[in-house]
Length: 95
Image 1 (spheres, one colour):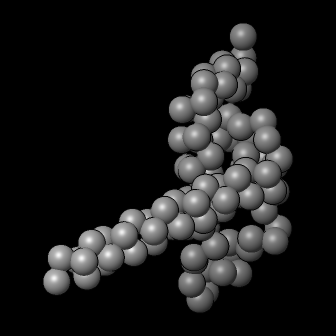
Image 2: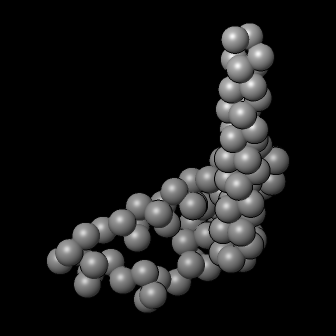
């Protein structure tokens, strides 16, 4: 069995797949964040995202990985916002 196939089998587990997706999205954000003179070296538009996804042992298309991560972040932010509102309501009720 090749190393790539072994890694893909390892990331078949849901928790490992989530970690790999999060790592991929973080790596892309860090790659995009290069400044000034480095931007001409690290050109995002010339990067083959399919190869990058494969290096994280994922089989999904890069666009799908990004969308799933973005949707998870939205849900998390919405949940945190609702928790903050419920805490404020509790404080207001006590006063």
